[in-house]
Image (cartoon, rainbow, N blue to C red; front, side, top):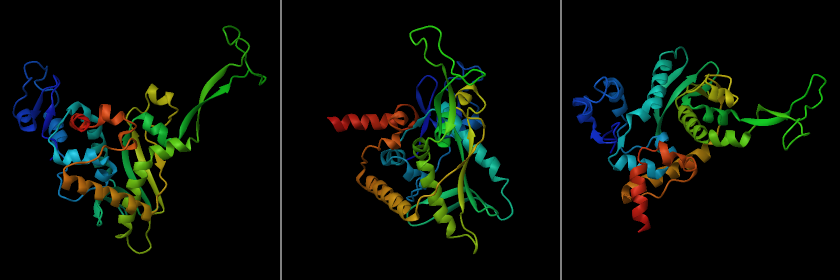
Length: 303
C-alpha cells in the first residue's frame, strides 16, 4: 500500500486525513500548520500499485519497492521538498513541447511501463528532466579536483617558505573533466531508465524517426551557491549527455528485476537491496522512506 500519513515536526505520526482536517500542532506553530495545505496535499499524492511495475520501481532496490507496495508507512513532508521541486519543473517544461515533439507519454511493454519527459523530433534526442544536488551533478559531469603547482610570472614554481614542507612547491586545486568511473556510476540508473524509454519510444515513432541522442536536462538544486562552485560546477542547469545501453541487456536487467519484485509480492518477502541501490548505505540512513520498516525486518532476520 502507499504512504498513509505524515511524520509531524515533533516526530509523531498521523494519517493524511487527520492532517488535512486540522493540524494537531496548530497552537504551537506560527501559521497554524507546519506547511501550506496545498504543499501537504501534493506530498500525499502518489502512484497506486496496479500490478504493473514501472521503470522507476524496478530501478529501486527490490526490498524498497516491495515495502512501499505492501506496508503502510509515513513520510516527512519537509523531506519531500526537492521531489515537489522536480515535479513542478516537469510540469512547467511539459507545456513547451510542440511541433514534431512528444512529451510525458506513458508507454508499456510486457516488462514495465514508463513515461519519458521529452522527445525532440528535430534533433531526434530523448530527454529526461532531473533536479540533482551539486554532488550528483559533479559526478555526472565527471568533474574531479586535481592539485597543480603554483608558478610565478616567469613560469617557475613557487616554493613554500615555512612550515614542515618548507622548500616544496606550492599547489592549488583546479577542476578538470574526465573522471569516467564517477560519471558511469552516477549515470547508471539514468542510462538504464532512458535506454528503456528509448526502446519503448521506438515502437511508436513514425517512419524515419529514431533516437540518435539521449540527455538529462539537470536543474541543480544548489546551483550558483558556494558549495556548487567548490565542486567546479559552472552552470545552474547543465545538459548532460547519456550513453545508451543495448536493448538486449536492458530487457534482461529489468526483466529480472520484474521477476524478483513479483516473486517478493507473492512470497511476502524480499532480500536486502544491493549496496549500489542503497548508494553504499547513504540512502538507508537518510533518504529511504521505508528504512524504519526495513531495519525492523533486518532485526527479525538476525534472531
